[in-house]
Length: 171
Ligand SMILES: Nc1ncnc2c1ncn2[C@@H]1O[C@H](COP(=O)(O)OP(=O)(O)O)[C@@H](O)[C@H]1O
Ligand SMILES: O=C(O)[C@H](O)[C@@H](O)[C@H](O)[C@H](O)COP(=O)(O)O
Image (cartoon, rainbow, N blue to C red; front, side, top):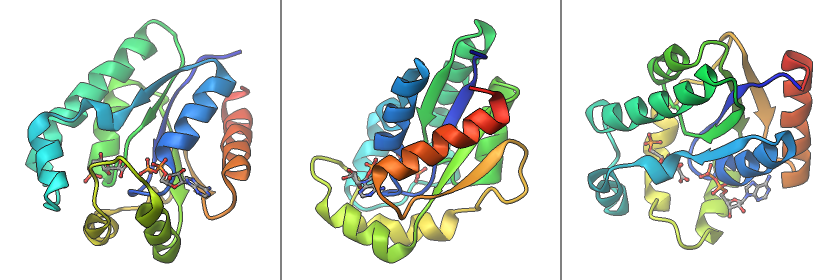
């Protein structure tokens, strides 16, 4: 199987973490939880309901870029969950791992709100969803980026992601 590096992207509640972990398992790839790489200052901000700005995200994205770069350089597969809301953030990640795939989990606000309202044990409050949606630049017509309908059941979303990678990368 050809190795690949993949980012599962989308706003809070779209399913990046659960879907990312599942597809990493199916591919025999390492799963990298993007949220685990935030500096404490970012977590504190988000916990207080303060949206992150470009400057807050810069160091975090740089860390993620160097993480996926290690996998690219050693020819190992990894799946990273990361909101990657703006094209400039995605381009930064691409610079660390040429050929990087993006799977964008798309869901509408009503679905996202209800999922976040039910999610437990996460620092990200529901109140930040609006700013996430305002900041989001969907990866339309971007190289190796696939838009996945994430409003269906989790297993269907995972299957659609794996199918997309199979078509693009032969996995
Ligand atoms: N396709 C889905 N259908 C129903 N619930 C889902 C689906 N995908 C994710 N969830 C649930 O929604 C919540 C948010 O998922 P999560 O993976 O934490 O999203 P993100 O990492 O994008 O913020 C979790 O409680 C998760 O179990
Ligand atoms: O699981 C979530 O709710 C999200 O992943 C959330 O934690 C946030 O989206 C990012 O970690 C970083 O913040 P930005 O999306 O504002 O860059």
